[in-house]
Length: 132
Image 1 (spheres, rainbow, N blue to C red):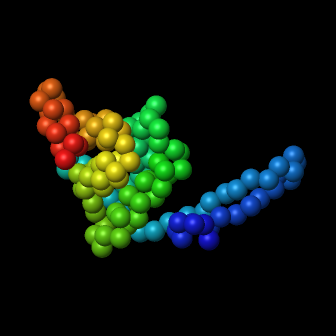
Image 2 (image 1 turned 120 degrees about the vertical axis):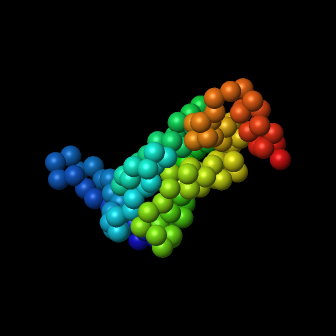
């Protein structure tokens, strides 16, 4: 078992070049749907969370390992819910809670997209909230 307890870690070797590498295997769970703001439903995609965190943390002093850990934490939180559906708002807030603890600039970047900032005042309010 891998450290996260949700995947199996395997060491493998290429038959041609004899190089060793690690693979991680995850058990596919039940289908989870994300309800978007416009009411559409789409399958939960862990990669979207990972990409959002990566973009928010771009050129910030946040390690890849920490970003992966945040992605894992958000996914676990969502899967712990008993409902087969989750709102995109819930997913965004879960990411924001973790980013706020790690890097305020990354938090602001993600918040500006997730909360759909349109005016300078929106940023000012968010900065005040981040300073609390």
